[in-house]
Length: 152
Image: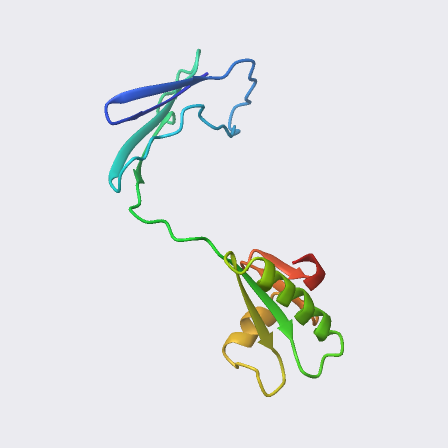
């Protein structure tokens, strides 16, 4: 199978051999030639496959636009720790999040989300509370949920 893409008038080809992809299934791949995004501009891109014996070419092609950025902000990891002044185990969560905040200050944002105490934010608290099963625990980028603070 040849995987091809065209951008800026140039076609790039990556060949993959010894495949056996069943009908109505998918195959994930990474093209061996990345798109060169040199400026903050739009790069219209057409991607397609050439497969020997493929009689139906209606599903072989897609088009997209790759957009270059003039500025890429630093990605920071959001670490939210569920805590409360009533929670006897929560000081250990504070220790782990403080260590993380100290070591990775340029790459992380640590938020202590209080529940059922004087520091509770009534709007913010339910959002995290629905992602965790107990205190202290937390979420990382709202993707990894119910994480023990020692695993942050």
